Image 1: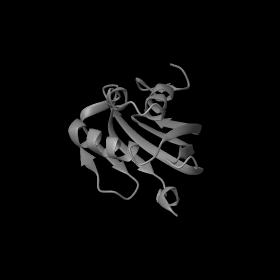
Image 2 (image 1 turned 30 degrees about the horizontal axis):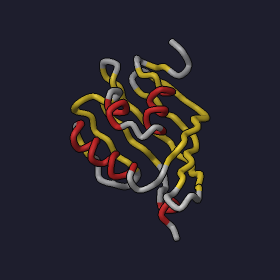
Image 3 (image 1 turned 180 degrees about the vertical axis):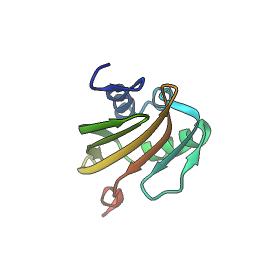
Image 4 (image 1 turned 90 degrees about the horizontal axis):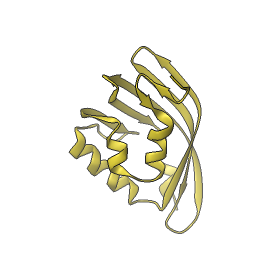
Length: 124
């Protein structure tokens, strides 16, 4: 198993699908009944709700790029720490720290929590 792949999920490819804003590829890593929470937003459950949340968020900026600096795995849980750079629609950029916590079941993400202060992305 490579450093980027833990318990059946290739996190390098997962983050690449996010950076490509490819919702369907992103969902291929997520269990159909998974729970997903971004920051302080209420959690959503299932592919349809996750798809709607992710696509809405993708529309709020022009592009993004993740740099994972640390990954820790323990049994069926993985924590990724890093920085994400968002490019706004006006071309300006901001880099923010994040931590993602994943729980896995049968090689798919069953619980996906993103810890980030996203407020600066939308600050004027």
